[in-house]
Every structure is written in structure tokens, then in C-alpha cells.
Amino acid sequence: MLEGKKILLGISGSIAAYKIAALTRLFVKAGAEVKVVMSESAKAFVSPLTLSTLSKNPVYSNFTEGNQGEWVNHVELGLWADYFIIAPLSASTLSKMAHGNCDNLLLACYLSARCSVIVAPAMDLDMFAHAATQQNLKTIAGYGNLIIEPKHGELASGLVGVGRMAEPEEIFDFVLNQVQHQAVFKGKKVLITAGPTYEAIDPVRFIGNHSSGKMGFALAQVFANMGAEVTLIAGPCNLSLEHNLITRINVLSAESMLAEVINHYSKADIIIMAAAVADYTPATKSSVKIKKQADDMKIELVQTKDILKEIGQLKTDKQILVGFALETDNEVANALKKLKAKNLDFIVLNSLRNAQTGFGFDTNQIQIIEKNGAITPFDLKLKEDVAKDIAHKIREMSHV
Ligand code: CTP
Image 1: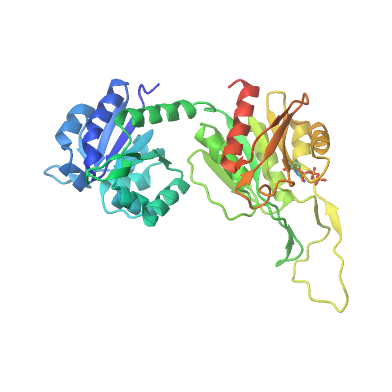
Image 2: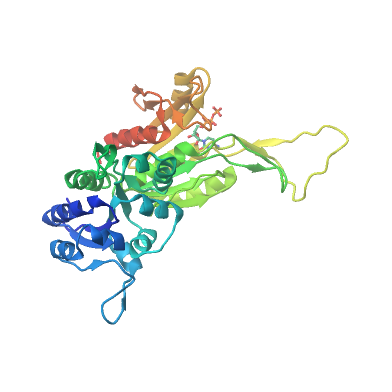
């Protein structure tokens, strides 16, 4: 599975750096090509000669190398890698990664890498437990980096606690798992809609809804992590996503969302409509700001096109189409009606009865209702885990 994979190992200054010699061997034995970039302080813990001998490649640590001061192209190294593993990750390198600092070659490679970045922190227990470290870990996880949690054990200081870098075998298995995971939807194209739509009344006012976009963005992230090429058509929301397999297209209104979906649906293998699309839009949109009148005012609304229903009529048998239903009463019956009317393969039902679900929450509780009437209920989970359940259901259906 790792044969021919290009692994860039980034070593920062920590006593655990000596273990990277064993990790290098594991990757080389598995048929991967390994290159090493290390910070200046890492050299005090493991010699570049050991690593270049084991990896059969030069070890990089400065922007210039050799007598002639040749330039080391960090962009090329960053682009070369299929996986960039930063282990051990010191508190200092972590902090720089979180803030986009670039004062050494390892960090320049990190900032220019387009591949999955996996980090294995190693530090003393109090440093690891410090609020700043925990915040930095959250920040880099938010950038899409994967974290191999440090373990509990005896630390170099003699203290006992959480901070030991995961063992080389564990890091190797994590990467292997990741490679397998990323192969699940490899070559598949997924189209996802997310967030609300804003229907303009005039240049300054609109009709919108409380959708945060979190569910659709979680789906985009999960599918991209599983190797799919994702097109995310997003209504206005304050969320960001960094993934080289995700193309984000921002739209505002139901009409512009429909236009982008029509542009992209035919290339997609899997289409998931998680957006909260407005069902109505003002009949006329004033081109100038509407002035306050002496009387009350009425806005005439006309129906928008149901994007999901349109695609339900256009889709081929090979395409999987998934919709969402947000219901407050007669949930299953209403969801089933939508499933049939919109020609879906399955519908994800969210009930607003659970206090922790719906707009703005990080959690959701769903039931998946299939074409054949089968209903699978799930527990209350983080939206990211709900997205994984949906991806697994699609995997089952499409036998990928
Ligand atoms: N949907 C859509 N285009 C619309 C309205 C809804 O694509 N104009 C999609 C949503 O993305 C969702 C599904 O249809 O996947 C169901 O949305 P929902 O608002 O629950 O259902 P509606 O069909 O609009 O019915 P109602 O609002 O009456 O419950």
C-alpha cells in the first residue's frame, strides 16, 4: 500500500527525534520513498548522516546547501510529498505552524505543502497541557492537519504524564490507515451544497435563514479526506476549509446556487444537497435602497426552483442523490414524501425536537431513510461524525 508513496519527514527539536531513524526504516522497508527535512535544533538529537543513510536521500535543513550555497527549493519539496509527517512536533514548531511563521526550511515546506500533513507532538506534560499548546493544536487541526496524540508515560524530564511521542510503529500504522482511508472515494466526484441562501430585497436587505453551513462543510471535509474530489457550492457562511481536493464555489441566492449545481451535477458521482435553500424569493428586487414609507409594507414572494427536485429528474441511475429534511412534526412521513417526490437514493432526516440539533449546533442527530423504506437511526454526534456516517452509507450503497 505504501509502495511508491512519497513521504517527507519533518523533524523538530525534541529528544524523541532519535526515534525517527526507526520510522524512516519502516517507511523505506514498506517501499516508500523518504526525504527528511529537519530543524537546526533537531540535529542535536539525531544525526543527519544517520537519516540520509537510512532514507538514501540527502537530508535538508537550510535554505541553501553545499559549498556553492545552492538553493533548496522548499516549494518543490512540499509539492513532491504525498504525506508530510512532522515528528516529533515540538511546542515551538507547533506554535509557528499555528501562526504561519516561516523561519526555517521545515516551516517553509509546511507552508507550501499541498498534501496531508500528519503531526506527532512530543513535549513535557505541562507544556503539552498548557492552554496555548492546546489552542495551537486546535488551530492546526482546523487547518486540516491530522494529529497523532502523544502518549502517557515517563518523559525526558523524569516526570510522568501525557507528552511522549507515539512510537514509530504507531505513526507508521496511522499513515498506513490514512492511505487506505484516502483511497475509499479516490477518483469519485462529489457535489455538495451547504449553508443558507440570501434572497435580495434591495441592495442592502435580504431574506435569509439561520443555516450555519456546518453540516455541508463537514461532509466536504470527510469526502475529501476519503479521497473524493469535492465541489462545494456554499451559500454565505463564515466557515473556511483548506483541502487540495475541495473546490469551493460561493453563491448568494437560490437562483445562483441552482445555476452552479446545473453547471456541475453531470460530472458528479455523488450529489448531496445539505443547503437550506430559500423556498421563496422577492418577486422584484429593487436596484436602489427602498425608503421607509408612511404605511406598513408588503413584500410579494414567488417560489424558487427546488434544486434537489430538478436534479432528481435529471440524474442518471449511476449517480447517487442525497437530500436532507429538517422537520418539526410527522418527521418520518414528511421525509419519505420528500424522498419520493425528489427521486432520492436516501434522505437524511434531522428532527428539531432534539435540543442539540439543527442550525448553529456542532452536533446533529439523524435518521437515514432509504428508497426501500429502511430507516437507520443514529445517536447525537458531532457533525463531523454524522458526515462520516453518511459517507459510510454511500459507500455501502455504491460498493466502492
Ligand atoms: N432544497 C433544494 N432547493 C430548494 C428547497 C430545498 O435543493 N429550493 C433541498 C434542500 O437542500 C434539502 C431538501 O431539499 O436537501 C429538503 O429541504 P427542506 O427545506 O427540508 O424541504 P422543502 O422541500 O423545501 O419542504 P418544506 O420547506 O416545506 O419542509
